[in-house]
Length: 120
Image (cartoon, rainbow, N blue to C red; front, side):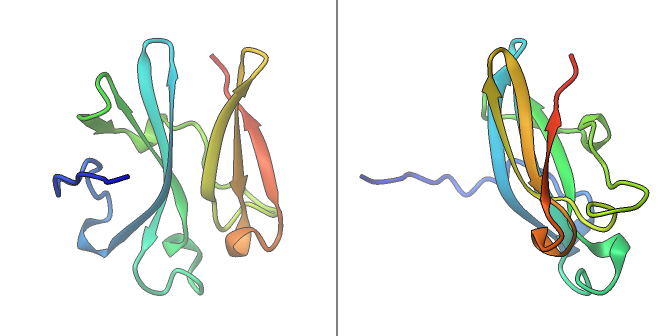
């Protein structure tokens, strides 16, 4: 098996050159492709809550051109608890006509992982 890469970045940085992105998960729903991924600052993300992982969101009609729209992703840190500092490593799947997301919380999941259900 061989992979062909074109060297094109498909998701724009929201934090500028300091942004690290990880673990995209892509799924089709309602005629569009949706991508969730996690992103963080390159430094001090373990010790400063505001620099830790968050969930990013983008959508596409053709899987090649993506529009990043984190504000429409629908899931942010909680006011308190196991996912108040960090959200990372999303995995989206469907079961019985429902879409679910598993994601890790604070300390990369040390304090647990959870499930969210997509509302349409």
